[in-house]
Image (cartoon, rainbow, N blue to C red; front, side):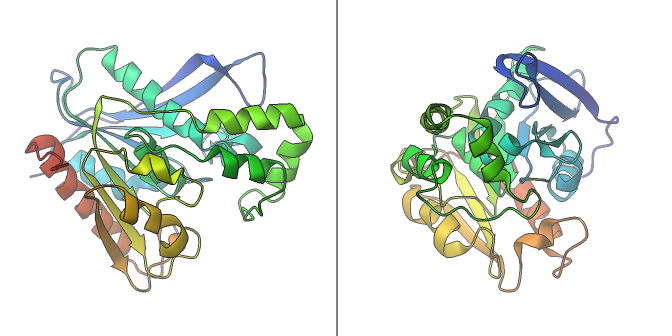
Length: 292
């Protein structure tokens, strides 16, 4: 049964522990949109949501709206430098580990208003990696370092042409190596109880970290996805996360089908919204736990 909610609240938090990509003298802005199920019930199940590179909270309506309608508190982040809502910066596209820190900031903001109930994490593409990072997934510093130094080929990003070259020119070799080391930081957040992924980024993840995840995880992929394909990006999760549940969305579903106006399968997003509600009801409301 749907629950009628108030309009979402948008908060921009200045994270003093990190610097803005565009102004190193300013703190990192973290823009959080909150749909609160009930202002008097701060312990309602919460889901934090991360969008894909170059996307936005608004573009995640296919995931957010069904969760809100089902009665979940939802906190979604417009990631600094990687969202159409806040503008693009090169680091926003190739520093994906910072997304997990953004999600932790969102949870800190919620927790500042009182104890949290059960918490889940969800995301699309790079956002799906970020959700898994809160459960223990880490990036592979050797791969990230190889990309930054040009030893490993880097896939072009249509939303930001030349982004790697811009970063390579902006920072010294030593700084790039330091960023690569930071990318492998453990972002595990004990507040998170389950993870829902759609088209997850997995080719740059440290494979050994996936075996440490001991939470319920459900991952979905498109059979025609050429951005985060099954073989290179989804397979690491399916093969290495203990007890993960995996499903193909559809054989012709592409990555672009989750963009606002590029859908070949008009039902793909609706199916994923329904799947997310079902998953989080089981894991956050009914209390399903991992058998691992």
